[in-house]
Each structure stands twice: as structure tokens, then as C-alpha cells.
Length: 476
Ligand code: NAD
Image (cartoon, rainbow, N blue to C red; front, top):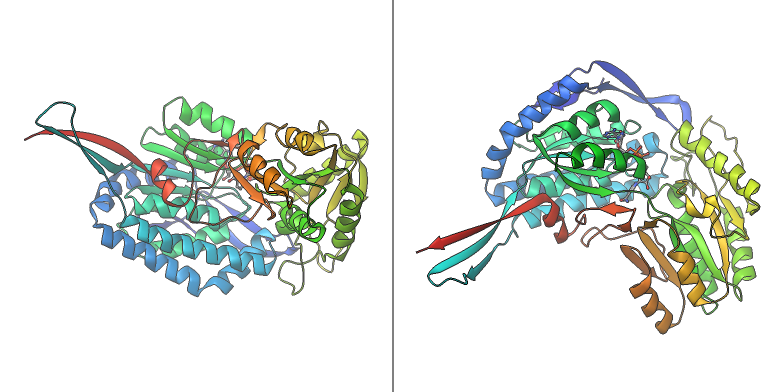
């Protein structure tokens, strides 16, 4: 059994949870300890004690520790990628790429630990000098979703540690394997005991205890908008610092002058790879009428070529849906789309494979109205809808007509429209002639409107959330 890490010790849980392979429900990936509220309090106490010790380490020592973690992740990327594919259902090449990204993120933040700068100014009063210092926030609670089981934890844990914070980490229930493997690597990297704690367990128990503890000064969360609301109500009311990345309903606009092949690749890659289980997945294709029939035909043809199957099998493009409830939700939305009057042009049916798993064919709805539920609500599966638009102006209006604003894309050869879209689409990230999903790790990540709250993640901008400034006045 894989245990929780509390105060530098591997600890039994109060119960256990089986980790099941969504590509093969008879395959148990492992058995994982489940922490309770008392364990969580012990971890928070340990993190509180360890934080000043860790913050007093030199920036070189912190950088070296993060670099060691990154090196081991990269060295073991195939093995860890197999574990990730097995527990989450992402196809193996995508899983290995995710692990590799996690390794690079630790190495990036190893460098960032050496680049913490302050500012020095003259005061408005003569004889006084002002220094603006950056300091750690303290104990940071990290709560992550199941769809990127190692990359999202990495892009929160690495900056938290780089800037001298201690961490209490609660991964999603569905994917404890990658989280445990990452915790094991971090545990062996010579941090003071209690600097990093792993608590596998229920959101409503472990997560809620973290949200309510005044010792957890900051919460970095990625997950659904509903959980985000709950976090706001608990941790927000006690004025914890919050960083929340939530859902998306990301548009891909395709204009008449787009290169058709490129637009089709952007659409299929952005909407259906990783089984559509990406917050940045494009789930709305907003297509100008001149190119509409060609685009739909080409996407349907391309979807029919995709192979859906076991995530570890060679040549598979799309793995299973991650679990039973997400599978039910995806298929339910297919029924909702049909009942709303959208035309199901391709897929949307359960598939049988050699092993029992949550397989479905990628679903494409056409002739959709932008107000339909399938065009407004985040489905988080391999389901996309095509919405016709009269012209660029209407396409932009439709693109902005949801509560979300994470990522947005446009396929066009018009510099004028691409430039206008980059400025006016309501999103935190915008892509021209490239899929809405698939981002770099050294630049800011995040959204607007209901998709995000608080400072950006990733790249140098991560310093905003994981540090606080202190202004010092000195009279010589
Ligand atoms: P979720 O909100 O169900 O769970 C996310 C995490 O919150 C899990 O660890 C869960 O255990 C925990 N949690 C649940 N209830 C809690 C509570 N009361 N208190 C504290 N923690 C609690 O989300 P999910 O199903 O794991 O992930 C899918 C969602 O994540 C989608 O909406 C997707 O868009 C979003 N997501 C967003 C981004 C982004 O960066 N914007 C990235 C990936 C996923």
C-alpha cells in the first residue's frame, strides 16, 4: 500500500482506496492510503514548523533540491508516463510528454529560486530609503484535479518550494499514483521534514480541513467551477490568498480564409486529444458560413480515422474517459445535444474493446445554436459542437458569449482579423492557427471571467502568488 507523507514520515491512512485503470477495469493500479481531518491537521502543523527552516536555506540549496527532483522525473519519464497512462487513461505518448513537462517545470523553478529580486527606491522623505522585499507566503495548500496528474501538481509545488514556502498537497482521488510517485521523489531530495506533505483523501475531508485552517495562508486550486465556489466560501471568507484555475468552454473560430487542413488539425487536436479532458480543450467551433460545409466534412472524415482504445496500446489516438461518472456525464450530454435539436454528425456512442473500459467515439454536433447547453456548459469529454457564423464580427460575439474565458483560438490568414481577435476575445490565452490546448510552461497560464481567480500560474509570473511583498523604510 502507498502511504501519505506527513512530517517526513510515510503514514498509514484511516482507510484505503483502489486506483482502477479506466482502460481495463480489471486492472488495479495500486492501493492508496486515505487521510482524514486529523492527519491533515498533523501535516499542516508539520508544514508550519518546517516553513521557516526551509525559507532559511540558501537559494542555491533550494535550487539544487528542485533540480534534483526535475532530473529524476526526466530520467524516469517512460516509467512514470506508463503509470500516468494506466491510471488516467491518457495515451502513452501524451502521458510521457506530460511527465517530461513536469520535470522541466522543476528545473525551470530551480532557476527561478536564484532570480528573486526586490526593489530599492528613494523615499519621498529625504534621508529615508525604501526596499521592497519578496518573502514566502508561508504554508501553501495545493489541491489538484485528475486530468493532468503530474504536470498540474508540478506547476504548483515547484514554485511554492522555490520561493521558500512549505506545502500540503492533496491530489485528486482518481489519480493518487502519479501524485505518490512525485511525493516519493520530492521526499528523497533532502528537504527538511514537513516541508512537503502528501495527503491522499476526500476533497470534502482533507481539502475542506486545509481550506478552514488559518495556518494555511494560501490555497492554489485547479478544478471545477463548483468546487471553486466552495473554496471561495471557506478559504475566501477567512481571507486566505487564493489562486484558482477552473473550467473552460473554449472557442475555435474558423474564418473563410483559413487554411482548411490546418483548421481541421487545430479542431481535432484541440477538442479530442487527451479524450477532450483538458480545461483548454476547444469545445466550440465557430465557423464562417463559406467554409462551414468543407470544414464539417473534413473534421468528420478525420474523426473517423482516429483510433480509440487502451491507453497503453501502440497506435491509439484517444484513450478512455477517466472514470464512470465522467463517462456518464459525457454520454448524457450527447443525449442533451440531440434533445436540443443539434445534429450528431459523428460519434457519441459507447465502444467495446478487448478490455472493459470507459470508451466512446468522439462526438461532433453540427448546426448548433450558441445558446444550447452543449454550447454553454463545460462537458469535459470528447464532445464538440459546430456553430455557424455570418461573419467575423458575429463569430467574435459568439466566442465571448459564455461565462468562461480560459483559452480561445482562431484560424485565419487575415492579419487584420487575427490581430483584432487577439485583442478582443475574452480569454486569458489566445491562439492563432494553433490549437487552444497545448501551452508552454515558462509563460503565464490562466483565464478570465469564471475560468480563473487570482494571480496567474507558471513562468516568472508565478512569483506573484507564491510570495508576498514587504516594504521596508530605513533612515540612515
Ligand atoms: P473537482 O473540482 O471535482 O476536484 C478538484 C480537486 O478539488 C480534487 O482534488 C478534489 O478532491 C478537490 N475537492 C473537491 N471538493 C472539495 C472541497 N469541498 N474542498 C476542497 N477540495 C475539494 O475537479 P476535477 O473533476 O478533478 O477536474 C476537472 C475540472 O478541473 C474541470 O472543470 C476542468 O476544467 C478543471 N481544470 C481546470 C484547469 C485550469 O487550469 N483552468 C486545468 C485542469 C482542469
